[in-house]
Length: 161
Ligand code: ADP
Image (cartoon, rainbow, N blue to C red; front, top):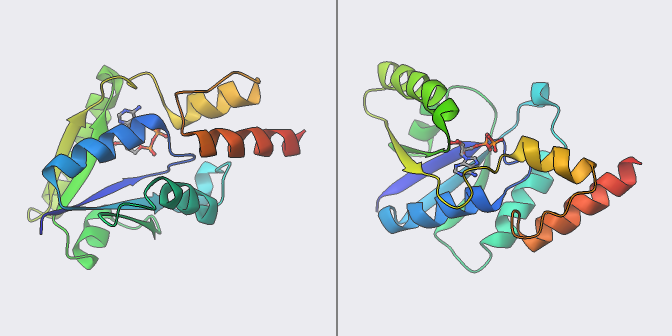
């Protein structure tokens, strides 16, 4: 069984993330979507909410599992799961530089773990940060995030005042 870890903040999961996971499932039998529990990033959604949103989207697909990852070394987390592939999405040129650094550092730390990139296509302009900004300004995010996420974003923003 070929498995991959797809780690990120997923604050919240967007259609860009979903596209990467769906493409990843062409190459891998199983994908663990690992939510980074980094409080320093002051996330909008709690870890539990972020995991729930991922599970909601893949309720019918046992090949996708949502988990949390405490922000230690990603390669150690991958090893602890018995997985030797880290899956990443690549958007613009800006992503490339930092992703190359991270993948190379991870290879130095753990030559037995490989990073695999999937190019973004339709959603190359989507980032969770931009989504939150647009949601905060009352913009329509239909088609950019899953409907259930859209609903949660609207509720969260309304409760924030
Ligand atoms: P973001 O940068 O949107 O806050 P994450 O930190 O959750 O996202 O990212 C996890 C992974 O998903 C990273 O490899 C990131 O490059 C990738 N990714 C995020 N958004 C997209 C997108 N719209 N298309 C392709 N890959 C993406």
